[in-house]
Image 1: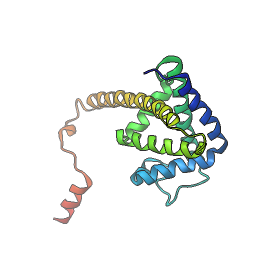
Image 2: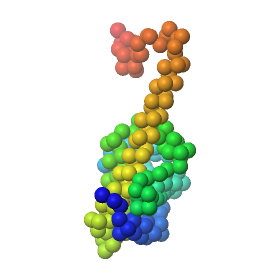
Image 3: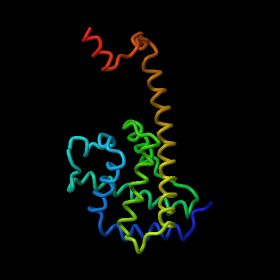
Length: 188
């Protein structure tokens, strides 16, 4: 199903409303992520060393704004081009960062849920509708799919690099030992 002009308008109009209150909505967005998945805290450098969500942290605000804006831009692209197109350098960076942070499908779903709850709160009951949520959700799903596809490419490239790095390295055949195994060795 094509992304309609009405869906695009719902996303753009709600984004205009939300832009007026970015600091509060950014904080709410991350609070919601951590309510849904407390373990996600360690995935964000600006959260992992803090006991609480830092209200005035510029990185938190910038990250939230990126998610909101890229999802909004995805809606526009879906309407105009029928697909989400992200600049190659940006996409490579997003794929690499998400892969190396250990992001999996379930994390994307947590972010989507937090995004939709934040938008609903941000625009208010009188403006929010199921259609609006559906439009943002579809735009986000396409954005997430583009990032996931790039993560697969980055992982394949990393695997190729590692295969070539260790061609002559006899140590690469040794089994890896994790911290639990080391602890067991130390107690024996």
